[in-house]
Length: 172
Image (cartoon, rainbow, N blue to C red):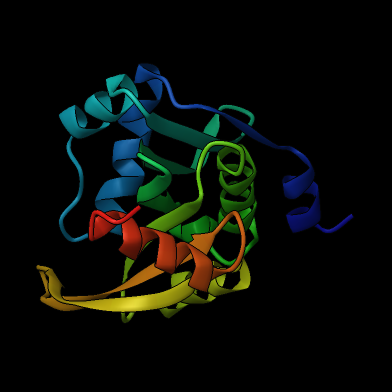
């Protein structure tokens, strides 16, 4: 069996715990120009509606996902995979676990991603996310627009957008 296939077989997915944060911070610091800090991850672990998952092989954290349930939506706030483990399916597997876990409690998953991060954009698109807006100058270091992507979990994206707009206008 090829090593990549063997590694996928050994993948485990668990809740993030405080003891994981040091290793997560290592990945965070090489993945983002404006990384989350220790206290951001502790807040996520303790916040109502917070969800934090780890993808690992044996004792090594390969990637993580952190998000928050807000009303009928789940917002994916932070997602990263070790650079040396990218493009091997680990991120896609972690994303599928997160989607499966949120389907019963959320109407949609939302996220922002750097426009230039085409590897991530392709992964999200393959998972069924669609770009619905652009947030200009959302990121700093360097300045860059964010694509706002949404995956409707119940019904079509157009139905979710209509419900969201109705709620926002106070009609729903």
